Length: 228
Image 1 (cartoon, one colour):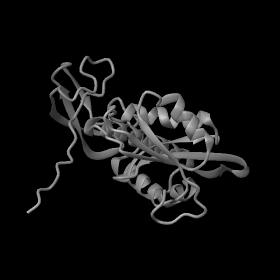
Image 2: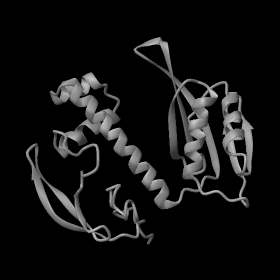
Image 3: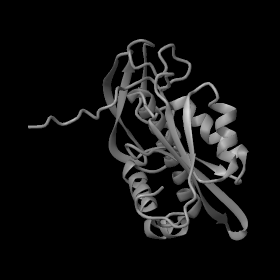
């Protein structure tokens, strides 16, 4: 019988001024609960043994001090993941549009923090890197917005994305983020595949010059479910 993988993450101190900030070696223990005016569900308190202080599960985050319950934030996140727009979510939850916008921003920031912590905790090994860009727009099609995305092709692990113009500047930001997350060694050659946009080639030469990699440009006339 195959054993179930342990997906629990080590707790860490979120206070930036603490000497044990984000240290996975520091001991964090539960230390009671509390109730807020906007949420009757108990929230957990923790104790940082290394820094000798308490903090709440929402402390030092963008959720701290904001109106709304965990249930409301969860509902907003689920509706957002199903593709509903801000106005539609506000209508379903009967909330002001500005409230939903604030929640979406907060949820996105927390999601990014979790993703980065997960990558650093598991020690991300990138064997085959794929990068591509998607086109969209803001309000009207004259205001173009490009989404540069990257994933590890072997495992289909989502690495990151950057928003901006379809230029080397945006590609540079994407590759810089990838370099910070990956485990690199001169014994293993990184495989990289992109389309023929020159921005990727420039970014790799600018940022990954000391890392051995094999680069392939693909000309894709149409997309299939097996392509990025």
